[in-house]
Length: 153
Image (cartoon, rainbow, N blue to C red; front, side, top):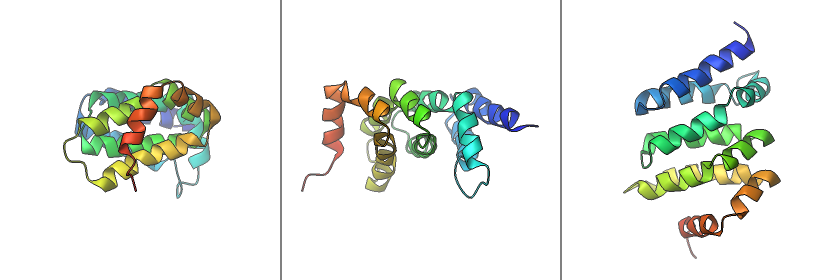
């Protein structure tokens, strides 16, 4: 099985299980593990994940389960790793990944601050790419929602 086949199988598994929280989380965890060190092929995997639609699929999972802590963590982790690649960052922003992230945070009753912080790390990863920032800057309501999550000193 080649690299493309492996990545297609991982993304397909996430897509196939996206309606089932635990299976989706497991599938995303498997995908996430190959997208960063210590995996020696993480850069190649990241490029292949882009071609296989991993970012769009992961945003779909996040949208299907707003307010679920485990899904939020899994999606945030996977999207954060995918956002290291500029095309993925743009796809995440264009597909409404930030909106889905905020909707999930807002739908949860009692998310620990650490979970919200981990989820918001995705924004930091996206902000490194000007095209992704462009999508976010077009929506003043989105910026307002983001600012409500930032602790005031």
